[in-house]
Length: 504
Image 1 (spheres, rainbow, N blue to C red):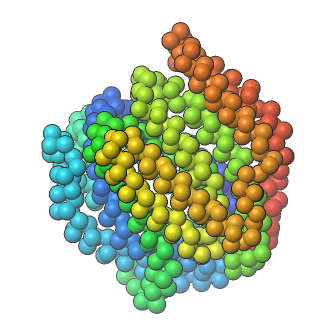
Image 2 (cartoon, helix red, strand yellow; image 1 turned 135 degrees about the horizontal axis):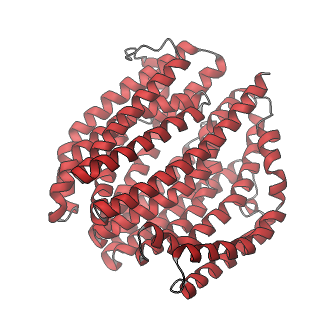
Image 3 (cartoon, rainbow, N blue to C red; image 1 turned 135 degrees about the vertical axis):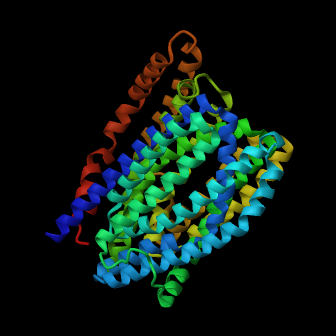
């Protein structure tokens, strides 16, 4: 009976993770289209740069958000609710204090940094929204501890629901506040959204751990040391992740301008939402693998191999259709064809094909607690991105800044997945499953066919008709190898029999 409950819950988590991505994608599409019409792409670029700049302060979270998932999952497996409560309180108090202090220190320096990278005509607006960006960041980092607690309880479905409601609330607030207050209205909406997510997350986690006090007050030194020890690599990962995006956007502002940053932001958010569709289903497995590490570690590599093959099977068509539809998406989302947006979308999609294929290894490392290669992958990515971005941007301009980022990201991703195969003696040839050769070739043919159709016929038809034609042609080319692929026959069985019904 207990196994059946866990089976059902894992399936619910996977479904809700997918629902979350789909809902957030629709919300982002609606919000950005609204912002383009009300404040324009340059203002969107300002917003993107300010958020990216302030996000660096998140390094003060000490890696505790990631540690909470592992520790809560461990103590849930042992049935130690009091320790779970101590873990969450210790993490919240630590993060609240450290992040709060760092934000106070960072504020004047962020002000100066914006003055160096932001055009003088836009500096006043950037400085105006800076405090709100910092406050919302602080609140969201605290809320992330509570969300990690839900993940550790394997209740990712609830966490997804909270984030969906928060995003919808943010969208409604933006509709109300942006027309009246402009960019500052968007900042107001973000702060209110953060507060709502924090309160909702605290209310829900308290239902799972009734002994949690209304206000956290207990700080456990021993647990703090254990979480910091485990979270050290998490902290390095967090630092490098937080550095990469601001670095790219700062260099893009310097060498390409705010308009280019605005279109890069749109392309990046779009691609990330599709990536999240795949990543979120894998993230569900982190507490499961952590639980297996305590109970039956031999099953972990079996999960990885099947997970990787499934990821390969699904990722190729998803990113292929993004590339095929990039020009049409530009017309619908922006209102007309924008070359730089299309190029960014295609380049980022190519990058995330490789990045996504490293996801099963990445999350397996997280669940097992071996973070060395995840850390090295992120460090290499961050260092290469900064060095190559400066050189490429200075010599060739903004476009090469993005290409430098993509090259760096691919290098870091390959390090993670190749190291995993080496460590666990999985042949490297399995990085490209032979069974997926036909679908890979079909995706390439479908991409070139779709782009050729667009550039030949889009002048003669409305955008919706052009998209319909492209999707129809793409589907015809990809459908047969996709349908005949052996993974299709095993997909439901993989989820239901190999993972969901195992005794965990």
